[in-house]
Structure formats: C-alpha cells, structure tokens
Image (tube, rainbow, N blue to C red; front, side, top):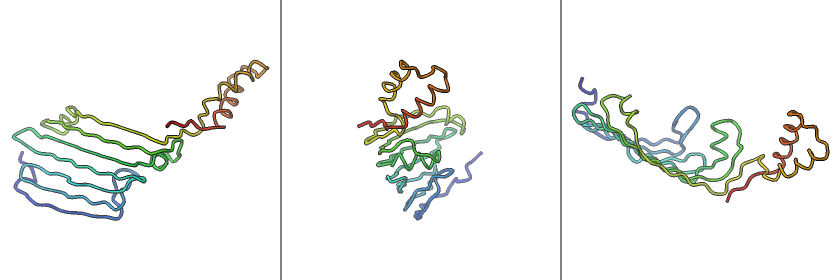
Length: 173
C-alpha cells in the first residue's frame, strides 16, 4: 500500500549531548538532520563524538514505484580502540586508533529484499596498535623450558604459555 510518509515534506534538525546509537553505544555532542520528502526519508549530516573519535554519516531511503533504494555512508575517524573494545566486551585487549569508512547501497521491494541486495565497500586503517598479553617472544622462552624438563601435559604447557604471553604486548606500527 501507499507509504504513511506519502506527501510529507520537511526537515527536522536535532542535537543532543548524548544520543543512543545501539545497545550500549552513545554518540556525544551529536547533530542530525532528518529530511522527509514525498519520495523518501533521509538522515543527513549526522555527526557526533564516539569513543574518542568523530562519527559522521548519512542514510537515504527513496521509493520509485514498487522499488525502494537504500544508500548508506559512514565515516569514523580517530576511534579509540581501547574504549571501543571496553564498551563492546567489558575488557580492552587492544589499544590504538582506527579510521573506518563504509558505503553501501541496495534496491528491493521489501526490507528483506533490501538487506539481501546490500552491496558496498569499506576501508579500515589502524595505527599505534597494541594487542595486550601477546608477547611474540613467548614461544622462544617456552621451548627451552620444555627441553629442560617442563612436563608436556596440556595444563602445564597452557599455564606456561599464558604466563609468557602475558609478559608483553604485541606492538603493530
């Protein structure tokens, strides 16, 4: 049937100190423009702080006859990996900074058809990355221990590996 938005037209600008994004994620100092048109709806010029970085993007859904077209763009610059990991899982096994760019589009006649037709591209770059408790020299320190009598039982080797891996971090430049 016809869209409930049919015939509506206008723009709504929203700003918020804290704007919920998903389950536990919150954008800070966010601004968003909701644009309603006779042929669709768009989220324009979304910007907000997110885990030490800056999130921006847009989403647009238009209708042409029976088909709907969805376009998405998302940019995240300067994401703090440690804060993001802690938000997602409660622990922070990684630190560093990431930049992410995603673009996607789809055309279909139903929400499930849109999801099934979704295509796009993205790029991720990271810098100053540190993976905690992953000392690459751990194996080199365990091998001599095994040769000099460390029991080859799984629990003993596991304890030794855990102790040795935890003694340093993997640094990726």
